[in-house]
View 1 (spheres, helix red, strand yellow):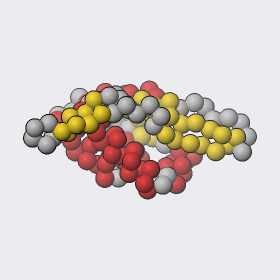
View 2 (tube, rainbow, N blue to C red; view 1 turned 60 degrees about the vertical axis):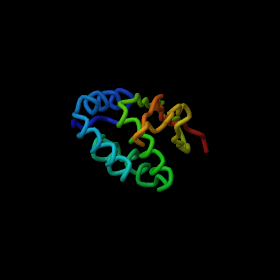
View 3 (cartoon, rainbow, N blue to C red; view 1 turned 90 degrees about the vertical axis):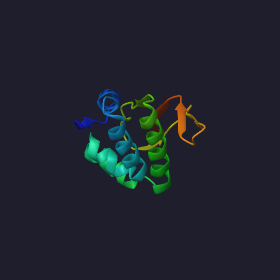
Length: 128
């Protein structure tokens, strides 16, 4: 897959390419992002130094949670959106979250997950 910038458009372009892969290849990517969210992001997006530093500092529990959510979306070809406003001037603190997570996961009669919904990642800032 082509490395994309970590922007709303870059995320959509990457998902278009990802969801065009074979089901087996998509599952490989789903397992990879679930196994190591940070490495998957670095392998698939071109990051600025600040973005990479922020990702490196992301708590393991949060990274695992984000990776698990993305994995579910990949497997079911569900939408993932990124809201990434420009940071404020001066000193600020950055927050990452999934405020619009409406994923619903059930298992079918064979125990396989069936997911619906979408996932939105949002970056927000607070001034220090």
